Image (tube, rainbow, N blue to C red; front, side, top):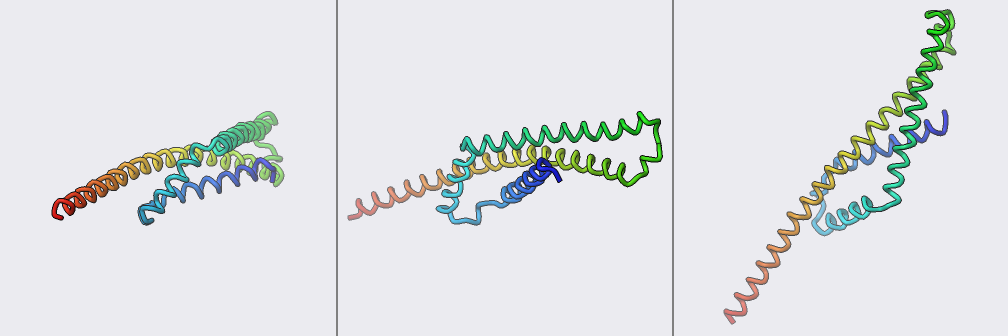
Length: 158
């Protein structure tokens, strides 16, 4: 297995892990821990190294998709140039070449699709976090206002 194929599989597993992690709602956490988690997620999304890694991974997998598509076309065209269905088409070596080329193409294509899915899911999650911050921010402000009102009422009664 080539280095780029291993990299593609590694990125694919990382994407699946991020996607599954993004499906978990932070609402089961206490408010203080949820705020800390939201702060870390926001800082990670603004991190230049994380953005560079995402773009570099996407570029590498895109290049691998183009290369595997070219290899697959080359294997299929070799059959046509030899006059169609020849005896070598049914050989194990030829079938392995086709299988390997198709596997690399499908894996790299699925990895690119997962890049898009994870990007859209993280964008959606970011919108959810913004909404959650707004709701929690209003709740905290309302609680502070209620507490202030209670203190003023207690002072007036004294």
